[in-house]
Picture (cartoon, one colour):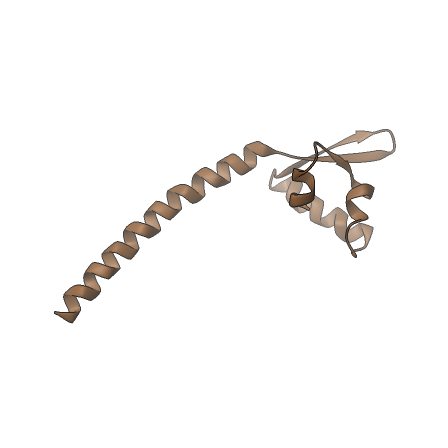
Length: 88
């Protein structure tokens, strides 16, 4: 869903649902989870609900993952050093 939303500014929930073999209820539940995570936002346009990505949430996640990758790289380096010491 996120990939499909990334390709456009916004889609109606029904247009989004057409591309999946899920019930409308399942699509709706999935969108509620994404909305709670602030990954998407919804607005009403007449009878339709329109959905769009919320880029700010992805910037925050990307920043966190870059920081975490640095921590992991440091830990792997320490582990490599320890293993070299144990072999000696």
